[in-house]
Length: 408
View (cartoon, rainbow, N blue to C red):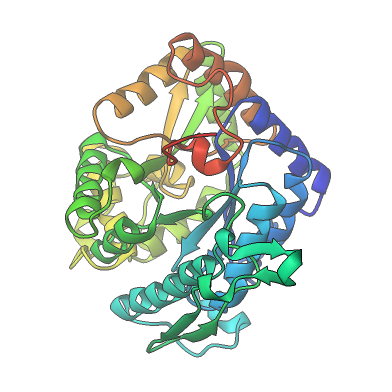
């Protein structure tokens, strides 16, 4: 988890596969003393990504930073610096999650209500984006004859007073190498959709079933256009997906079974029980979920309740056992697609062509061979069908995502 050479191998392989970017999840307390596991989020993502930037040329670098606990000016400088170091390949994944172990390690007493959380995050992102605009590139005139480096008349000083944050002044670095860094955000609740449709360039989502993905896709695109006067084509929807690949379908299914066999299902049952809002003793791996005991009230506001409702809906529709639900949810709720490169490509293209998403946030079933399969098997299959790039169109992350009018 702290071996830079492993991360360099991952970055180089992803870039060899012409993928858009590398997305590193993170939280402040990656090691939860109540459930000690390998701290795979050990390294600060911005520091790690800055190191990867010097060994890559095209791959986007997505740094996860909360919009609730840090200082907006610090984050604005951090992400802008990464964008300059990488020459336009930085992105900020805005998270608003609140975990007890994170609150404890930061010395905070309690979490916020759902509405207050997004109000606070909105102030945070407002300050960050305003600071990115406070020193326009055009204000740097570097006129030796006038002994003037910055034209003060062209500055846009921030003067923000909010309920949670305040900031005044000009950031000491332009807000990006070429335009501002890319903004990403994840969430499923109504408040999250409102927030993401306003701020995000790309939304990470979690959908098992295509109809719910299509509904989400339509909702956030319409919100972007109608409420925030944004071009909906500039808001990308990218659900998570776990491809498990094999040379044959049988080989792919055997790989999935081999990975499943390594899991301690009795231990993991407690995590599923927490997601469902039931006691672990209520779950029998051989039987369906105890639907009559799972609370589903008011799923529209809390992201956790939205995920719970989707999980229950999918389990009912498929008629699966609790064991199968657990094996599927071990991915964090992202959809698992098992099969040959041709079968997986068929599935992905179907979702794209039926307005369920604009692309995918690929999760890797096992490093590093799972990434090799993605790059060496799935990507060539998509290229052969004319559905994936043969070379990078841009040197910037924003350009490769198609978010710039001129991807250069």
